[in-house]
Amino acid sequence: MIWEDNQMMKISICAVVILGLFPLPSIHAESQLLADPGFEKQGWTISGEDSGMSSFSAEAAKNGSFGLRVKDDSTTAGSSAYSEYIPCISGKTYKLNGFAKMKGQGLGVYLQFYGADKKCLTGPANQGFKYDNIMVGILDSLGEWQPFTLSGKAPADAMFVRIWIHSFGGNTGLLCDIDDLSLVEQ
Image (cartoon, rainbow, N blue to C red; front, side, top):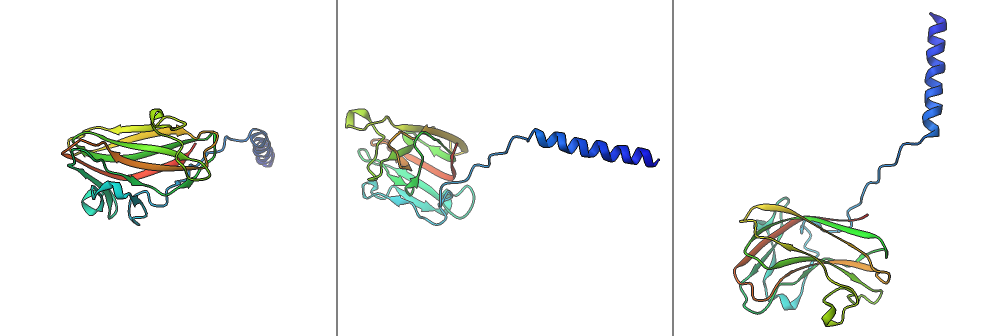
């Protein structure tokens, strides 16, 4: 009986040593980069061009107290809400997940990359931008929450990434709620 216990202890020690030679792959926990992913602190910027189309609303919340509501009835203008500037690393991929509840059509969520001077590097090429837009269009979900995902690689000269939520001009009757965003570096 003593011999069996001693043998079991030797086998256990041997197993620990062998496992130590082959470390398990590390689990990479992705960290949330947005300071206000749920619009709770209202740290987002609504540009003057927005004309009151974007607002922080309890009615727009999927979770928490607030969400972003975009109500666009303009025949010419579009909404415009921005996250904070988030430091990024060129060559890394940034992935945005979120939820939207949409009635109508004509709203996009963008990942925009900026240089050290905070000048935007991404946008329509015909408007002089160095890199193409990175955008996902939000589809009409008949008022039901639907997930969306967007990812893009930071260009070589990028120092910051920012989220832009924008309804396209001329899309009257649009009502979109957005909440529970997650931006991670991959």
